[in-house]
Length: 95
Image (cartoon, rainbow, N blue to C red; front, side, top):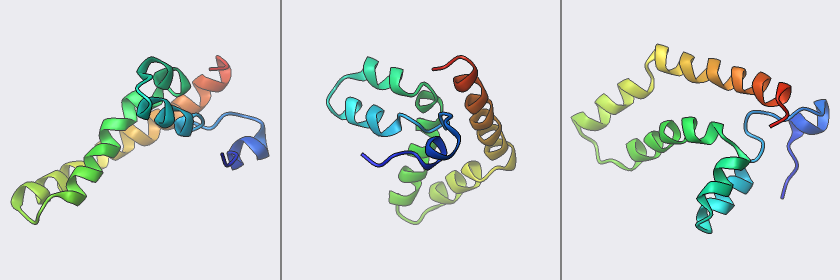
């Protein structure tokens, strides 16, 4: 598995550290273990999955509306802020 460049440079866990292991565990059916590898994935997973759903949808008004929701400034800012908060929390609590 490739090493996290952020962790190599700083020695800290980035908010995404553990996602590869979490996805692997989830694909093997080990859901509890996947969640333990990266708790933030529970929060960010549906948002990322929504982009995949939108990409796969045929051209329609529903696809356009979903695109408007996903690119909403407040929603994007919420995910950016929670990503940064998770960076601090996981390193302070050593998760």
